[in-house]
Image 1 (cartoon, helix red, strand yellow):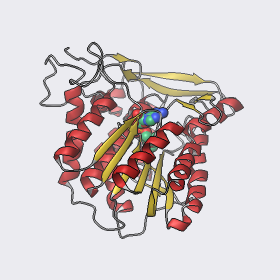
Image 2 (cartoon, helix red, strand yellow; image 1 turned 90 degrees about the vertical axis):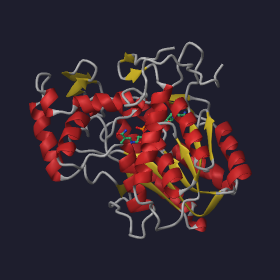
Image 3 (cartoon, helix red, strand yellow; image 1 turned 135 degrees about the vertical axis):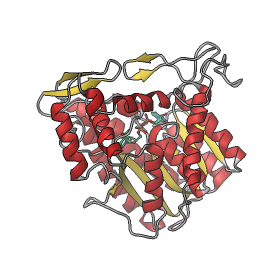
Length: 397
Ligand code: NAD
């Protein structure tokens, strides 16, 4: 099969296996070119939930190739068939495992629903059999649905404002069109459902189960990722349904830290910068903000992609002898470069002026599109995109 990108709205329904492998390799190369993070508590065995793409994949790559950790990953991806490619995350997992094996690093990936009790049991069995205990858990799931393991109820998250209807600038990335979107406010059930999917309860369920099974090492640490942004995106993000869910992570972090006291462990929420991922592309308004932000940050030489951002988090926060850079709620602030007044004032000016006609010069739409295609393995130098490939890599059905 000759594999080309097939874009439908904010997703690409095909993925390129060799390109995904190049994506993983490029991130490993980046990490190997940096001085390894070497102070602070060691990271020997890491569990990454949501390991197959975006920030979770970057977190796994830094844990493995930066810290030399054994990594167990969990993700929910679609395997390939002879006629249909797998999802990008499936190819990323294969590539990561092959790279890890070649480097002599333990890596196993479990595919399935991380919200389920069954997956928690599989993970515990695997840790007991292969690792003994883990000292780090990265919680990097981004999902639109969660079947609650106790009630069986299927919760669907929504991306909506609270209180009042929203009328805001957005962008159709595919067509390069700046447009206005209208979003109705969420009702109470929708808010609760979004908190049930993207809030902290499942993170707590994971820690409860792992602790109960005795697989958390003394000094165990866990991180969940959040985004806060500024007034430009607050109406759709931090002050909307997603923000309510993310606020619940702050509650969960405090509860988990209390639960981990006897192990000398802690849970923290890490606030990360806006980058292009599958999850992020699905949020209205944010891609417009991101393309203006990328331009402003690139002009100042402070732009980071997921791997550079996560490497900096490990090097300066998790694996550093220096105290962590925390805000007043105890969150790790990695969004410092995005949040400077200089960058935000610039983005605000661009935001006021941006139209379809000047988007190409005021924003970095081409950079956004390139990053988007790369998620699916397209656009890597050295990859033969005319090659006739077996999408199953000899492994699928
Ligand atoms: P992503 O779409 O790239 O990755 C999501 C991961 O979750 C994938 O590995 C996917 O397989 C996995 N997943 C989804 N549902 C699952 C399930 N039921 N069981 C197992 N695995 C499942 O997303 P991302 O943007 O990297 O988001 C990760 C976290 O980072 C989220 O909490 C997000 O809010 C946060 N974050 C993202 C940004 C950004 O700009 N992308 C910024 C700050 C914080």
